[in-house]
Length: 339
Image (tube, rainbow, N blue to C red; front, top):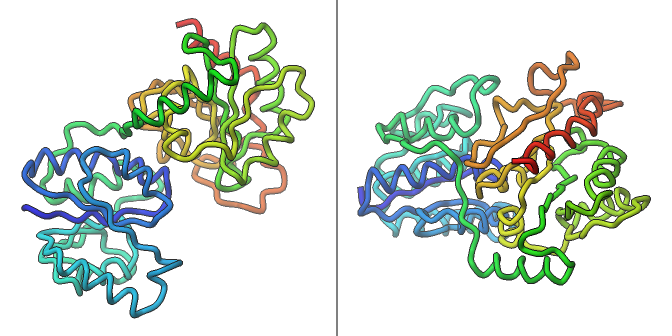
């Protein structure tokens, strides 16, 4: 095959889990051009996966919202003359794109009534027991593509590494300082470790002056970050809302350890090779745990209701996240510091 399209998923962590696919496809078809269709919010992640030759944006909530815009996208895909499309996303709409674009081989899961539009409709594995990375890799493996390296992997840009190094120096963080990046946010509240736990952790890490702490996050995490640092004796470096996604990759690569709940930044850190402490509560590490080359300590307490993934967004007390103690997280960080 000379031209391959991968129809990717929508969320940062899941796109990171898909990263080994592109290396495997390039190894199987070294002369091929590999394109990836995805939503705009994951573009910077895709730009950090070297085996992707072209990114095609599908702005489903913006420029491609109307039926006419979707038809124009289908026409554009048709004109590229792809030999095959691997559909990681399970949407019927995306399957129809590849069908009407005339792509001769269309491989994906037989979900949402779209099997008739695929040339190879794969039986969906048990999503309650299958890691998301393996779930995506299964799409290409079912076609006979060998995946030799199953670790998720991202490459931070040299420019972003330089920008982060300079930014940290302005905050008195040197190249040889032991740096812990704390990421307190999450895409839903149920997965967040309590604010007072983060505050106590940062206090303990910084009290002897041997550890530098940076708090990362998006614009939406600024208020959360302010709540965490409000009563701290020593203030960490706050970069929440101040770095873009590529700079975040470089920051995570520079860190000696990253502390985060189950989130995209946790998987970014693991995928650039950094040691991570993952705090899990309602989600299961067997399904969405970090799978990069970085070392990982996963902390999770069995509170009964989280033995399978829990999506009770109305949970009144979030006991599964509260059950992971500050001491456990601190001991895990110290474990990396002592090595």
